[in-house]
Each structure stands twice: as C-alpha cells, then as structure tokens.
Length: 125
Image (cartoon, rainbow, N blue to C red; front, top):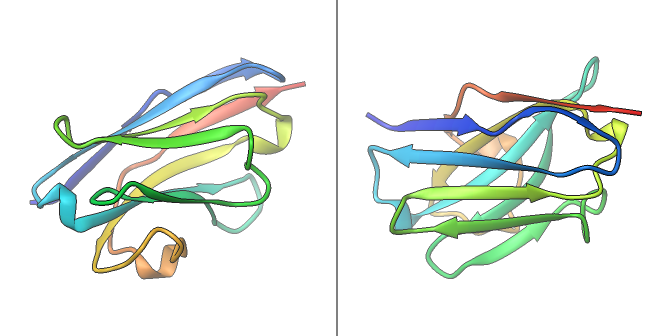
C-alpha cells in the first residue's frame, strides 16, 4: 500500500522558516517523482516544487524560487521542503504526492496519483 505522510507544518512569523517532510512507503522510491503542492485558503491547489528522486532534478514555482529548497533522502525514502523567508501568502495546506514515469518539470497535481493527508502551514504577518 502506497503511503505518504507529511509532517513539519505549523505556525510561523513572516520571514521565518519551516521544513516539511514527506515519508514514503509502499513503492519503489527511486522510480517516482515526488511533488509538493499547496491549497491556500479559498484558492485552488497549485504546484510548489517537484523532484525526480532518481536523478535529483527539480522544479520550483516562480513564487517560491530562491526561498524554498526541495531535496530527497532516498535511503530514508523521504522528501523535504525547506521553506525560508516565509510570507503570509505561503499560508496553505501543503500536500506531498507521488507519481511514477514523470519528470520533475511535470509538476501538475492532475498528473499525480498518490497523495498524503496534508499539513497546515500558517504564516503570520
């Protein structure tokens, strides 16, 4: 059974940092792309960052470039999203998702089949 479990969300002041973790199980980790997506309050889900775990290629949305860093620890089957210089507009429920046979630049939620339960990130001004 494929499982993705996010952790690391919370409440932080603007300018602060958080690191989200996505622990994966139930599939061959190296064969998959892992993505972070978010749903801000009252808005649609958008792609934040994705990584191809086999080659460590990455994609970032323009809104987070230079502030967020995605990485993977293949031995631990875990993908991280380090978020620095957080802004109130980063407030959202963050989800990780997994999909095989796609590359990092295909960071569109509709392509991803497996999803975690989400973790809330709230950035206060």
